Amino acid sequence: MGPALSAIRIELKALEKESDINKLKQNLNTTVHTVDKTFQHIRESISNLRPVNLNNGLENALINYRNFINESFRKNIEYHFETNIDELDN
Image 1 (cartoon, rainbow, N blue to C red):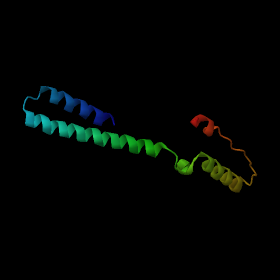
Image 2: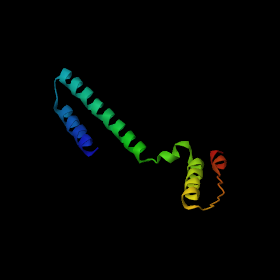
Image 3: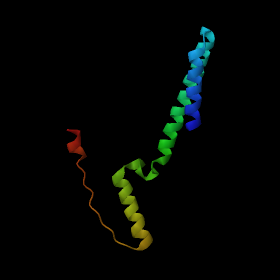
């Protein structure tokens, strides 16, 4: 992402000095495209950092993890999941 942000900065500095309106529009389109690609890269990076187990929610992820531990290590872990999310919405 660093190189992409540096490229955007360089492109914006070049726009500042451009006097030809056609070149200015073309360079602006290039800069917007670079920004769009950078946003997409950031979104993908964030998505890749998020554990897949959370796709079905935190409670399901905890249940799956508990089941994995119980099966793998022959344990009998129980838990109680409570949330105040409804209170937060009000």
